[in-house]
Image 1 (cartoon, rainbow, N blue to C red):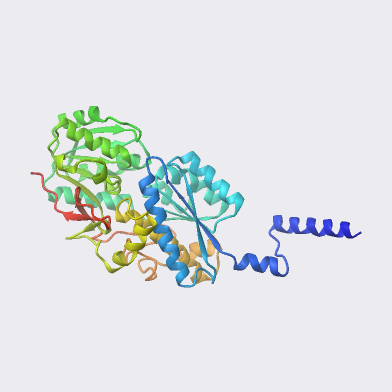
Image 2: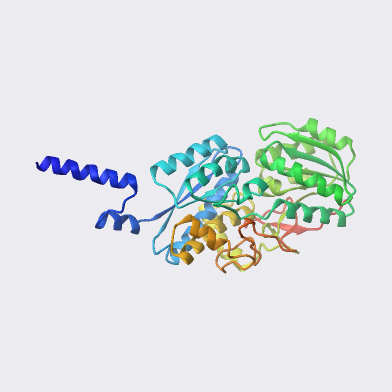
Length: 407
């Protein structure tokens, strides 16, 4: 009889756990008081390793600050970092594996848009909050991805700002090299029309794969079109190979890189003294000097921890650290405000922030978040973008601000 009772009790416990039924006594209480899991899916290996390592470091810095202020709902937040290998399929498998082991309350997804595209539908199905650095329009559609919020400014605003700056510099013609990934597709869809509208003609447009080792053929084609400047965007080692091709071919015209180039540790991969003038156009938080925000009090306070968790040296540009620093803070601030981990309640809270986010929930944007039922991205202000000069990256992962000059 005693054995039967034990078995019956065990079966009841299993059924109750599977059904999500609250158990009496200390078992349920222990669950409520245990650490809350915040999952980071980031490339620690593969082409995006620099990005993933930097984002992981900043997420840990953010979680440290959250815990130092009492955690979330009075519980500590525990960061769980899983390597995606910069592989969308591996990222999806890793997400499902973690959910089956111990369901996270929220996820930071970085660094590639392709990886986010593979995980986002799964997170929505599971109703798990997903924070990203994606500027792909389809990913930031709340009708499709209710529980997804991006810390990155929208691509259209970024490209509008770039077109305006190019016009100011007197640019009339542009040659372009774009990756064949999700970021490249966004560039292709959004940038050429904005340049044309601004009166800038795209005289050559070539594509390359992230795994390509030699892009001199594409560079020759673009160079032969004799543009005022060459625009390059992409990420990882491919950017270095592109710039190595520029040196090999002796190209002397100015080069402008987008966020992908700005994020890459170009200075460690290429002898920048042999390059023509190379500028990166991206978020001002990644630059120092005129128009930059890389020396703000928040940057100075957070950078030592970024460096520590990066293994003693920051692995990529500061603005990528800023993305994943913001993500956990946004989630924690909203969860504490509504006193719940319910994703629907957290979404509803974040959507009320508009352009006045809580003071402790922003790094990239100083006062211009615009999270709402229809907008899931921080809206940039007039000083949120500017040029930086390749070859000036320092220990705080910022570059000197620069003014684009054609000659």
